[in-house]
Image 1 (tube, rainbow, N blue to C red):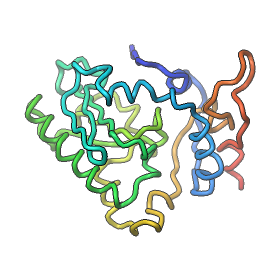
Image 2: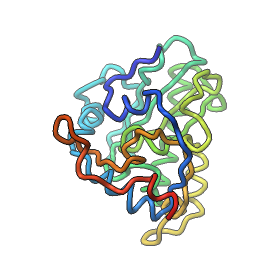
Image 3: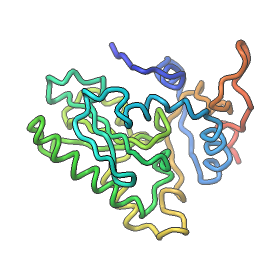
Image 4: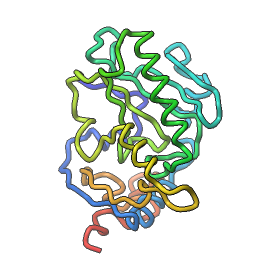
Length: 234
């Protein structure tokens, strides 16, 4: 039994049984489909994230926090973890900067942030729980369930592998390595120029071409967008 709180409409669609398909998201598909989708979200969609970062919510659960505007982040236990079984350890890093929506936005200027996250997570997990860094898997989802950059921290022996499948989970170390090979701004990073292949539910707004805004009751989300389904043959 899985409980998710707060559960957005995106979470509900993500965890509802539905057919899934493999899509190839080219840089062009990102610009024509994903970007308009992200830009359609109202600011309040991420209010729960900002409440955690500002200490208005979940303050008693914070394991580590750094208030620096560029390097800062909050480390909290994921609600999927009962905080007793170390082999089921599941933490989440939420960065303070609001300029990174997903791994597509990462460039070499973010290397200090990513290395800082890796270092502090390793130290905190060991000091708080006695878990060595060789037992931890740090990864980023694409597509993520919400578009404010966050990192999943999971024990290597964790049994729930659904969120760690090929195409969806990208190891933090791999992202760091790719950014180390990327050109500096204003040139686009490797992550911005890559084609990503992943599975997506056929009811996902990105696939069907709906915006992130809710339409009037009883109507489809507005405005209609070109979806990833339509981009697969272009």
